[in-house]
Amino acid sequence: MTDNNTAVPAPVSGAPEHAASEFMTDTRPIAAGDTGPGCKKRDPILIAKNVTRTFGGLKAVDVEYLEVPRHKITALIGPNGAGKTTLFNLLTGFDVPQSGEWKFDDHSLAGVPSHKVARMGMVRTFQLTKVMGKLTVMENMRLGGDSQPGERLSKALFKGMWSSREKEITRQADGLLEKFKLDTKKDDYAASLSGGQRKLLEMARALMVRPKLVMLDEPMAGVNPALTQSLLDHVKNLKAEGMTVLFVEHDMQMVRHIADWVVVMAEGKIVAEGPPQDVMKDQAVIDAYLGAHHDVDLGDAEGIEALEEQLSHDQESVVGTEDEGVIGRHITELDGGTERPGEPGSGDSKEQR
Ligand SMILES: Nc1ncnc2c1ncn2[C@@H]1O[C@H](COP(=O)(O)OP(=O)(O)OP(=O)(O)O)[C@@H](O)[C@H]1O
View 1 (cartoon, helix red, strand yellow):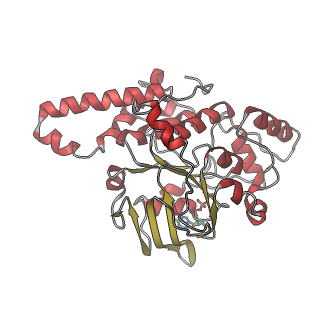
View 2 (cartoon, protein in one colour; view 1 turned 90 degrees about the horizontal axis):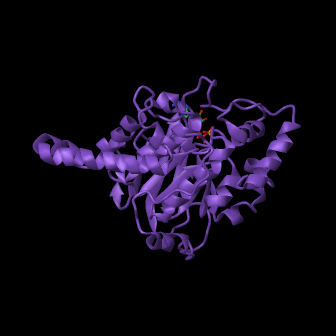
View 3 (tube, protein in one colour; view 1 turned 180 degrees about the horizontal axis):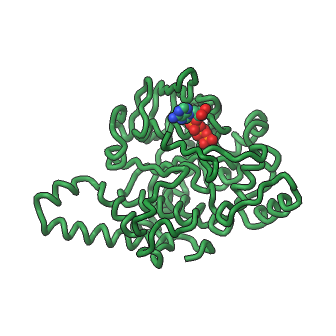
């Protein structure tokens, strides 16, 4: 496929369209009372209390209280080093906190390893994708399906049942690959995919466990403008199908287009939260996180073209790679023209630190 994909995605699970609309049209308040850092939600799917993680003398995460609203798209924003990825790592069992407890759907997750967290229905993607380059696209998908509940037991005990499970995994993978427009690539090595396609593959693979909560770490970073709208549609579609989404994003314009709720982190703490329109009015948030181009609307083609035009006259702005796209260049510029940690060439692979 090419990254020139702007089609609206079909449902992941074949869920009926009318069922989807109920999640898209629910306008009831998200907060249970007053809005503000650590506020209670009407229907939280994830609740974290006193989660802390220090590296040497640095308190990377110091989250007193956070609730993530069910069936909503929540954006987690904040400057570089705010602790967003570390919080993702802690909540999903990829790292261990110094203190804290958190519950997903009323199940305590403290001490639960990442693969079990995924099986319980809470999956995440990475800022630097973790697709297996030496496996084909389909093999990557099947790896996602292999962590489904009970598969090892059924494989061991019932050969017949396993082969029907195999077929089901393949059918499910085929459906997702088609939806993400990666079906023509299914026999290609994942290493041959563009950055944007790898993001799509990682998202598709995460959906193999039929999750309830999908956590996306900078899904748009490194994705070219043509694919950006498609990715936004995929994220919105997760909600339409009844999933909850928590995603890290640097660009507030992106956030405004798809988020129902925004949580702002700085220096490890939750410093603001609320509906995007309210959080965007907060001058401190604008000054600290939105930067010079906060008035440019990146969620539609005109906004992107306008920003491309602006950046093309800006000697300081870094010329991106084919896959980096305008968003990556925009962020790089906001960061003062320096490479961001974890980006190609930075020599910094945070998930592997
Ligand atoms: N394994 C580690 N060892 C030491 N320090 C770490 C480690 N992981 C994260 N940090 C530090 O913890 C702080 C929070 O980092 P984190 O990557 O969570 O921030 P972030 O908000 O995700 O940033 P970005 O927007 O750049 O991705 C940073 O100061 C970072 O350097």
